[in-house]
Every structure is written in structure tokens, then in C-alpha cells.
Amino acid sequence: MGKTIIKNCDIADFDTLKYDRKDILIEDDLIVKIADSVPAEGNETVIDAAGKMALPAFVDCHAHLLQSFYKGYMDDYPITDWLVRLFHAEDLATEEDNYYAVLLSCMQGLRFGTTTINDMGGYRFIDSTVQAVRDAGMRATLGVSHTDVAENDATPIRTVEDALRESNDIYTRYHGLDHDMIRMGVAPAGLPACSKELMQALKAFANERGLVFHTHLGEGKKETQDVKNRTGWWEAETLYNYGLLDERTLLAHSIWLQDYELDLIKKAGANPVHCPNTNMKISDGIPKIHQMLQRGINVCIGCDGEASSSTRDMIREARAGAYLQKAVTLDPTAMDLSSTYKMMTQNGAKALGYQNLGRLAEGYKADILLVDMSKDISLTNRSTRLSNLLYAGTGHAVDTVFVNGRMVLSGGENLRMNTGKVLEKCEELLYKLDQKMAKL
Image (cartoon, rainbow, N blue to C red; front, side, top):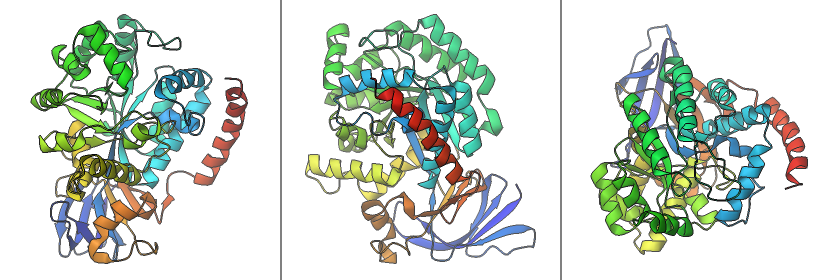
């Protein structure tokens, strides 16, 4: 890939919320030097980033990439009805639908500054999922959503043996692909739709291979009570007692938790993933994020699936989360700027097991955003850019995106894919899908 120098960028510091005008030298996939001036030697690509703010790229820790094609079809349904409708809808998808839905999700994420994503998808179309992520040029951890307890009439049932066989298949074929850009994880849907035996078997599989264990936790009030009725423990307590919580465990939503369960999560080192837009839109509830952060829990952000959240924009997602915490705690310092930006970047990288991702620092992966706020009349005042970007902006302010040292977005335009042609194909497929959805 060679060398790239990003000159005159204003590097944001999430601790001080200030900026330093610096140059960044990228060699292959790494940031190798950050200095007041990096002289060009003649064999580098030089980018003048004057007036642009440099940030580490965003890490989206909970996604259902296929759901970009179901945005709008599930609106205004409560979670129980929403889930049944979604299962039926996903049964209608073809391999081509899946490929373009995943590609669309990845392209949206990149447009808004996300370079790393953690997906909970299906085994049926895993080949096209991997291909779409690779074609988009995104860094991803991919897991299959397994269930073996009938939560409703539409719940897909797999045996423990099925789940282990499928997990081993995708691990053998895809883990570490493209110089570790593609990783596999395990992603059981979570209690109450999974048995103890399934969860423990998949956790053992993950531990043996050093993979992340990605599941839902405490998303619905009724569902959480169902777990309590079945096991005698609340849901996070159940996961703890089953031996499923550790630093490689990601817990999407984490809403209906007792205070002492937060202490168990902290003790185990597990990673809750805050998905506020979904939590609001399908009336899940509001998690105790402020209390988690006070305990030093490594909380991350996830845009979830667009069938529920309607967005892949991490800035909009994080803003919603911060505002919710300030409102529910009556504390304006809850989920403050510094904490929120870290949740969007370094916390997510840590949860997914990346040792050198999520920061702008020498020796770290060159996943970098250049943000241009000069063209948005609502984002004035250069001295408060970090605050204004989060509280007044959107991902449309992202001008340039580097993934693993490669520029994939410039001037807001995707350099790898023809966006117009992809959208045209998506509309063609969605027209056909719409005819099927009308019969549900």
C-alpha cells in the first residue's frame, strides 16, 4: 500500500477535547509517525487536510447487516410482534438480497465513519455476507445467530450440534481472512431463546479459539422476566452463573438489569453495547449506562439492525444515547463527550479484541476519519468542533475515511463502489421484496 502523509490535520484529543495541528505518516496499514511536520520524500501520497478534524474511525459493536432491506417494514411494532414479523421477512430473502443488503449496510457505515463492525447474522447466506463485507473494504467480526428454544412460533430452531458444526465451518473457512480484516465470532441470540447447553457449548467453542461471544441481554422486560421464571436468576446473573461473562463477551442492549448485576458484569470484564435508537423505537427501555460507566465497565455503542434503529450513523446513535442518559438520570454530565467518543472508538476496539485499533497513535492501525464541518451552517465554531459534531452533527460531516491504511472515502464519495449503481440494484431488489412483504 505504500506511504501516505496526512498534512495539517487537527487531531482531536478525547480526554482534553482539544486539538493539535499535526501531520500523520501512514505506512501500509499502520500509523508510524505523528509530528508537527512530516517531510515528503517524493514516494508518498500527500493529502492536505487543512481545516479538517482527524478522529479514530468508529467501531459499531452490534449490527444485523441484512436488516438494511427491512428498514420501514417493522415500524411501530412492539418487540414481540416485531420479532415474529422479522423472522418471517428474513425467510423471504434470497442470496442476492442478502449480498446487497449487507453491502448497503457496510457502505452506509463507511459513509458515516464506521470502519469496524460486529455482525450477528445468519448461516444460510454467510458466503454472500463475507463477500459483501470484503467488497466494501470494511473490517468485521461476523457471527451466526443461533437459537434452540421456541420463544415464539417463528423462532428458527437449531440443535447444539448444528450450531457447533456451523460455527466450525465458518471459522475454518473465513477466520483471519484478508490479513485479519475478517474475523469470525459466535453469536447466540441470547436468553430466553437459547438453552444453557447451547450457550455454554458456543462459549467453550469461542474460548478454545480466542473468539468473541456476542449475544443479546435484557432487551425486553417480559423476556427478562421469562428468564427469571425459568432459571431462578435475573438474566445477567444467569449468564454469570453459567460462566458466560468475561472480557470477550459483548452484551447487546443490557437494559433490564438489577444493580447487583452491573457489579457482576464489572467483575467479569464483559462489554455491554448501548443501542439507544432501537431501545427507544421498539419501546425496549433505557439501560443504566451512566451507572455502568461510573463502575468503570467497558461500554460500547452499536447501531443494531436498521429494521429497528433505522440508522447506521454512529454519531446519531451516540447522541441519542447520551441524551437519554442525561434525561433519565437528571445529570447533564451523564455520558459526557469524552466518555461517549471513547465508547464509539477505543471501547469498541477493546471489546472486539483489537490491541492496536480505536486511537490515533503511533503503532495503531490507520483507521482514520477526516471530518469537514465547514460546509454545514449548523456546525460553526472551530473551537467546539467535538461537541458540535456529536450534539449538532451527523455522519455526513465525515469527508475522508481510511481503513487499514487505504482511503475508501474521499469528499464523501465511496472510492471502491459505484454508489449510484449499488442503489439502483438495491431498489430493483427491494421492489421485488416489497411484493412479498405485502403478503405477510
